[in-house]
Length: 238
Image 1 (cartoon, rainbow, N blue to C red):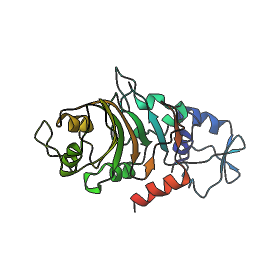
Image 2: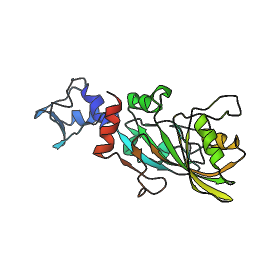
Image 3: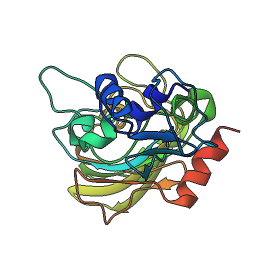
Image 4: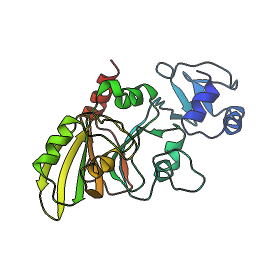
């Protein structure tokens, strides 16, 4: 990797800023001052320092966010606030993106990364990664609804959804349920309940595969994945 690209990717400013650091003889590679920005380095073997401070290269970033309502699952939007807007500026250098999509008014677990291969593994229809949502439903959810979900309901556009698991936590005028799906069609959970004559009034994703929402995360905040969570993500790529 070119030295100027490495330094830019590790938060040392623009390419112009990096050139200035090199000109001032503030950059060393294996304790040797380097002034040529085009020098190639190995970020995993070479010891690179700026002003005497070691540079730690990180190729990928993996963040768990508790997405709030009113924010869209996109990287850039001219009108709406995006989940990337909620990240601190030091994270922007990784060029992260949300994995999959949560509707604007849906809360909960959202993985944000710059690892395209992992994103593909988690969202590919062939992988059948389970996504579980907690939902409040206007109407009394029944065992018949549970059976229909298990068989795969027919959505309003004629598409037959894959079988889904429906766990009824409370039956009432406003029922509480957990629903697990293995695909991510547009407004899927809401549309599934519409097919049985009911309306979703609140929706929160609580898990995606083995990634489980950290309930200590306040809405709109995020953290890097734990070692165990990261191990799971890496296992998906093998």
